[in-house]
Picture (tube, rainbow, N blue to C red):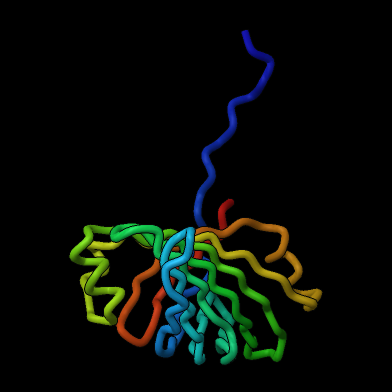
Length: 158
């Protein structure tokens, strides 16, 4: 007989919907680890329950195209809330799918998001005392890449 109590499975609570505007990819080339690309972040919006923010220009998504099906993403940018607070976001993601679908995505062509696995793990930092709790939680999300935007839905892992 175990003296450990069973742990409840984590649940998800909606945190925010983001729409991030992106620029023309800068391709570094094929390195020892794979194809390196940098996608400039130009702006966008975040909308949560009772709050909203804008995505400030100047961030970027640092991508590693591992193979014809798999990309590892590392986006870093800043949100400015409607109250003026700044939030630093680092969002790591995995994007994969059939080779022909990913090839169209990499070329900047529209694809059906249902054919692409795009899951992410955002983390947040802020100097705002009212928002400090977001640095003390884990978040997960799902995303979709469109020719000039990335749409994501973030959830707090509870």
